Length: 256
Image: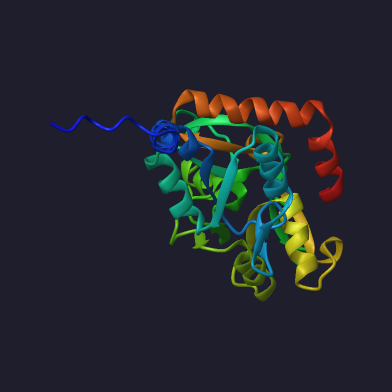
């Protein structure tokens, strides 16, 4: 009767390598994270086929700090938002934090500052003393973004006094053409889009009303609630690290 052949060193090494690969599978998968964002310049936008912007560069710095590969994809905001909520281990940025969103996400941390306004054209110089003064006016929003959600919670409605778009730059064009009276937008983004259109924001845009409830908190990166806490904490530590080592401040100065 033939005796079983002992494992040769080469076969033993192959089996050990296969076992190690199988064991490492979940860990390796966690070292590549799907990341969703939108066209929201200058925080995140596509330039010559590459996604860039202040928020993007902060996220990329965090990825480098924690040695994780990120597959960044730009989608319409409503789709990115719903996907992040429903998925495991999908990061989303740049997103404003609000009471309505608080329990829908596991928040990593703030990546950029924000200050929101209802803008009108300088030539119209609309003055509002409070939000209710805008009820009879048409306001440009983006589907499911923080501005639209905020206005909807305060009695405004899409199709009545809100005109919802899928892209932020469309609202600037609507404002210039007189199709809307006001545009809810953060200051940095509004000024950037005006300049991209060849305009001087100081000459074309007027701050009709500061939206205090949306200002000062900043944009965040976050995961949906199905994400393991360990992964969220890994990103949180990475963000804290780049804020300590000066990388975060350098990126803010570069873009702001």
